[in-house]
Length: 442
Ligand code: S3P
Image 1: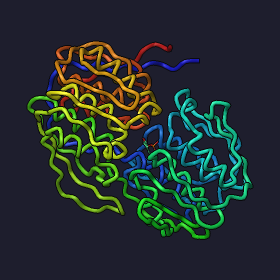
Image 2: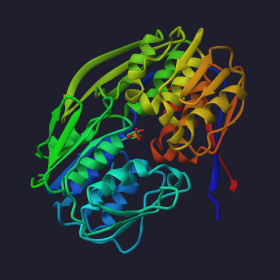
Image 3: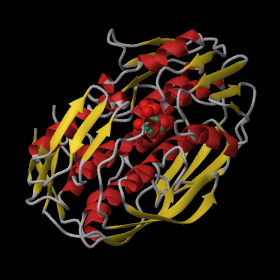
Image 4: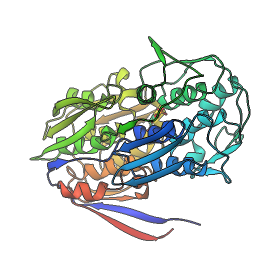
């Protein structure tokens, strides 16, 4: 059984102009469903990202008995079941392409009184899960994986979890969040030390739900025994979706684009720092707080970019933006060097290899390394590249057409719907000459 293919065809050239509000933040949308479901009372979410990944989380909690209304125009109402109110699902929970759903929910489900099985699509069932199953097991969780340490995951209920301290070998917000959620069900204190700062939406949202936690330097701790109280959540636009337009506006001629209401949590703004260090004309305006998360409007204008040795401390803060930052590097003068980013090899695709293949095909000198890439900026030609089912790679190559000498065709773009279903329409509205073409069943 296959699925029908979707291809993007993007004519070369054009400018990005006007104003745009990109859809809601994916990380925050996932967490709103998870925490809302185990809270007491009705939580109301606005700006929820109604994309496949977040809908996988939403559907999974419905399957565990939580009443969830919406999403309707970004509004979701979650009738929280309380920390102990979830019910056994009747079938395995299919989380599609969503690593965030699988890793965060594993922690939460390890503490329940019933068994669950988590599975996903081909890509998700290839991604590494030992990074969560090993620390969860040391808390007392009972989880089975395949021999390769991948999903399907079988999580056995009624395990008595005990708090541990875990020194994370990789800077991963998913691992951190997984363990903090397990910590809500574990005896004593659960703490995690992160080697470098990672997105802190879980911690901020625990505060919004009235659940205490502590930070001491790089160590974050949570104890069981508290309650989450329903709240209202305003989800800002996703800076990871805005990033495509920031790069597009910078590399296209005669561009001037404003992106409204974008989340600028400092654990997410590596893309702003990197683009500015490359010389981008990027303004942050009207910074304000919305429900525990900072937001702002971002203005990008045509910029003369130069190559950059990307500081390694920015890597976790821009981890999802490298596909499109590689496109920026291809359009910059001189060499860009990325190191310390081996995590890119285990995302929805191997983002180092897939981006290097596509850029080389478009005439760019892009050299993949084990933990990053070296890219020499130069003229981009048109051609046909493969997104390999990775949403962010599809959108990154679409933006490359703004500077290419010929049209760019991108295969295997269906999964753009996992994070940004409105991409083609919004991109067209501000000036990208893009068409989505449905293919036959593969
Ligand atoms: C996410 C954390 C990051 C990121 C992913 C979303 C999250 O993953 O790449 O898209 O919502 O916690 P890692 O924790 O694996 O770096």
